[in-house]
Length: 110
Image: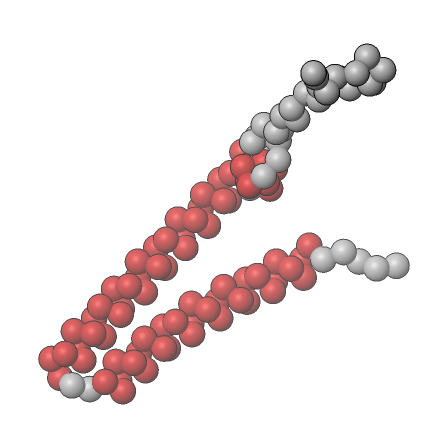
């Protein structure tokens, strides 16, 4: 005996939903729309990426010099103070730039 009855409604099989292309949604689409939408925004994005990498490498060099000084002289407080000062300068300069940029593009309420 079978469970099939002739009076049962026929339900069409659902087609599997396909995901949209990665260039339309997701992080790649956001990068494309926000950072690489024109040649000017691409140039600015690449220039800022270059500066950030240069600052990161420079900070690593300062930390390396401070660690060498610490190992050779034993002056830990001075080495840590130099590292903290450099990090503070980098952090404040990025914060000042971002605050200026945010004020520049802020929406004006009526």
